Length: 122
Image 1 (cartoon, rainbow, N blue to C red):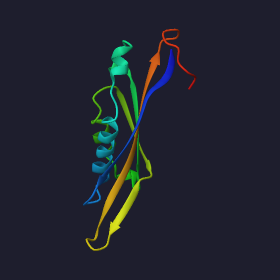
Image 2: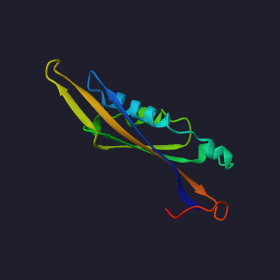
Image 3: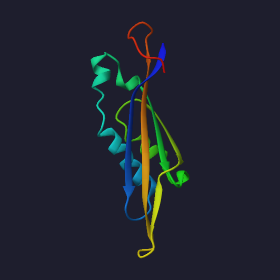
Image 4: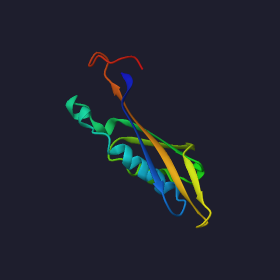
């Protein structure tokens, strides 16, 4: 088997009021998912449930992201979520609040049987 990345999608999301990092992260994941289709898996006869999905969320306060809630947004696969330092916090002194901007990268990987497909290295 050769572990291959078949899909990489990026998205952004925000929480305009309230500074909710999880809400911004979930919206970033939804944005990334709207750019993607899993037709590749069905076209190649691969089971989408067997793919490994690695989600990386960038926010200013990674410890404030509920990674289980973020993982629950994915319809298929074995999901792992990692929150890292990134994104933006935009303070609004007039409201005493902040807007949170999150970035998401969703990577779908699959153990492709050797010799079944000709794939580039990487």
